[in-house]
Length: 272
Length: 268
Image 1 (cartoon, rainbow over the protein chains, first blue to last red):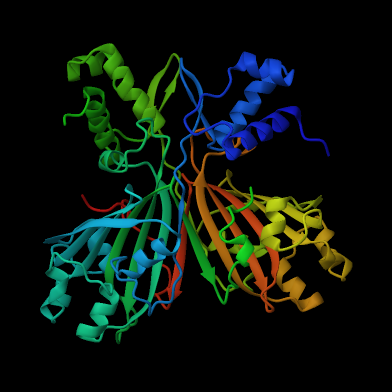
Image 2: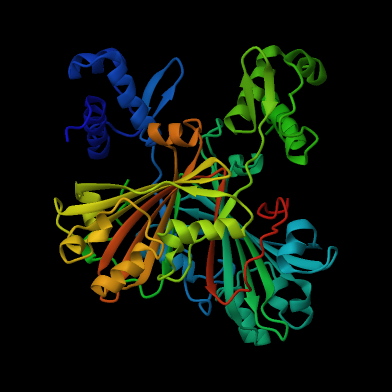
């Protein structure tokens, strides 16, 4: 099967981008130049460019031309770690180690701790009454200095009154909230559920993540509810909202004993 | 730092759309009305509306005006199911699940193709590039709306070893995974999903009827057999405006379907 000409041209340009011959931010040759160098029609060149645009490799700026997109090297987060692991609302330093292991530099700001009355999604997610007191812990996370995720975890105030006082402290809980609640209250997380969706970013998110103003980049929204056992079955005890821009985040879910990737193939990009 | 006026106007209109004061399908006030209301220039109003268009909140119909877009009711797929559950690869099982959620699903008969493995699929299936692969491709619809595109690759040796039904262009009600277990004793015991969000290509835009700047989920599932060998690679493409996923670890309570609107947005 011979590939259509526009695909061959697109592949050739893609290789130039990936090899660095066309550097990030550089202008792609004009339509006329491409028509001449590939001896192709205008429509073929346009289709090739369209393919590159839809694959996120180049962007067309009205009145200026076509440019190689400055890619942010994505970071892959694994969602399915055992429930007993210290996934304390992402607060644990274990998450830091994972970033460093891949040769990248993590940093964060926070936590911003707030007390408020549960309303709407928080009351629903924690299965408490509207107006019940909750503690929220908010973190801004960065990788290599680039804003990476925004994370807010809510806990019922009842956990604090029962003795988990550090939830109120505006300082890191290095082992993570789950490990801390186990240690302070003997609370066991028996499982959690994540809901994943993509939505348009809010104005605050556009500003924080420095997303392009044209709405081109969406954000992945991850809602995690952690459960403990009770006589009436599993009940929620923490609710986490994580916002991850889609241009720099990928997610992995493992089920069962997934073999590690072979050494020569660490984290390949998934096939198209 | 003050925001440019067009952003402030866009934000205000967006608030009205999200609160429902401007309902789905309703026309946005005309350019003239907006200019008067916000005491802004024509270009500022145009920039504000353009921003809402790009965010997928409104659509401009030439000669008619600008309208608030209706939201499609999303369908939620659980990623962490039993590796033997046929819902993953049987139209029959999938449709009963959609039916259970009170929706109406349609799955096209699989289209079967034989390809030589490209280098990236070969890497994931851990076969030599050029290896023959059987590819089963299906389109799924919910409530008459194109919902997802599924493409699964299996090594051709499954067929030569006796799993000849892989080549049949018809649904396997029990699912391909169970079939491979029955015929070849190759049992899927684990899998990895790799989830990215990206822009749709031209054929996806046509099939899903979405604009080029819409976002699709691109999930790549690699299934492993009891020996830890990859046995299939499934690529599924889901438009992000109508699909959500669940990941379950441990023993959370069974799924609640009536998630309130806005439950996924962090409170301000």
